[in-house]
Image 1 (cartoon, one colour):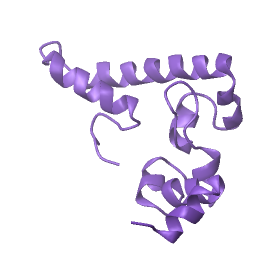
Image 2 (cartoon, helix red, strand yellow):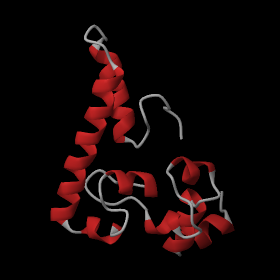
Image 3 (spheres, one colour):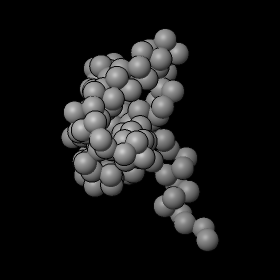
Image 4 (cartoon, helix red, strand yellow):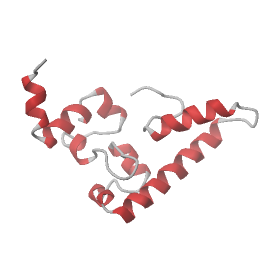
Length: 120
């Protein structure tokens, strides 16, 4: 089914990303977006599609988001992301936690969700 609003958004990346990840949307708020254009500025970039002001800040690129378009910076952000996610997860689990729980939460963290909040 044709949707005129979706078609218009598809043609304008800035409007599209602000509509999906903007500061007033539930997803945008969860990603730490606080200003009107944050959805576009902090859109998915880098090897693992880092999205949202909060995650950009976590990996050290909040002030220079466009640098994640460079392979060297994308690699650095990927390493920082996994290093941060693994540090969070290590604090969350005891030694007897089933590996399946850790892996599930790590995959959620890769998608930008914290181990304790698996929904957008």
